[in-house]
Image (tube, rainbow, N blue to C red):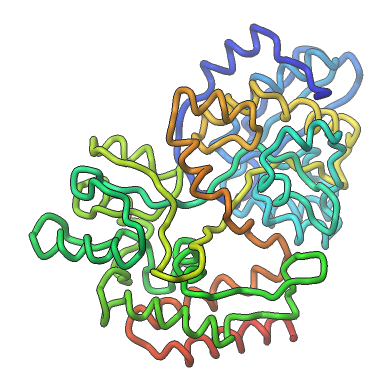
Length: 423
């Protein structure tokens, strides 16, 4: 790979700076606050500006300094804490944005549509060094638009004291959860957030297992926004399966379980099964429970329970003031194994770089288990039209979980999405 190794001093600093912290997978942000790092000299007269969310700023600063020193330029890393994507787009259009942006791969379609990012110049050797699903996620319309660095997906996290064996099917999981609840050993059958407006991200594996789909596909295999399938007969059946699991059925899916309480309920031993991602593991470990991580099971005879896969990535800003430096940094620095490992230490999500993942797995088996759970997952659609899907899908989910009619909920979601997309 055409990337440089970090210097020993930078790696030492990097290790000290990489402190574990939590955070959401797509963490959008607000106006940058002025936390910055600059190389001691500006020998080449250049300046590289990087925007990142709080989870990554500390890990980025040391090797941003090293990059600046080696290239004779100054480097700033600025922290943004909310509405990242929109803030980046607005700044880009105004000519006041960064040279490098850190964000989720599913921004790509919107950013490309708005002329905000350039393709990243990776060699074939560099591309081959990433996991296949990570590279697929950052490829849009046949071009690679980001350097991926972390892969995240949900899996089934199980309290092994309460449920020693991994359930073979969703039916087995629900039956075990019911058994434990009836025995007074747990309060909930399953910890999966639904809340009042639904949560499409977390429920998607179960929806897919029931045969549901979001979009048809184009001839190239990409999601086709002109073919929304939430109202299809197969998706209606999938919503029906969610209803069966809901409040007037098995009671496994409940609107009272939210993003605010679902991990805590599991970590407190009040639930044997949690469907969540790597971001939950800090609280799970603090809870002191014994656990294992396995793929979300499917219904008996159902389709695969494919989770959404998200990929955290580095983008080259199309309207940045120093695009040559930005390409060098993104293509040849953040594709470095040591950088990938440092970012993992700062926010433990499995590295997209295979060599880094292998080293991480040696010390943390959870990373490999999450990757195994997502290896056949569905990269979150990067098409901009996906933004029109989240809320209607969630509303339909919440409706059927409360006992509503699946056909009516699916039809309403389809109508809303088609209206937004003018299909």
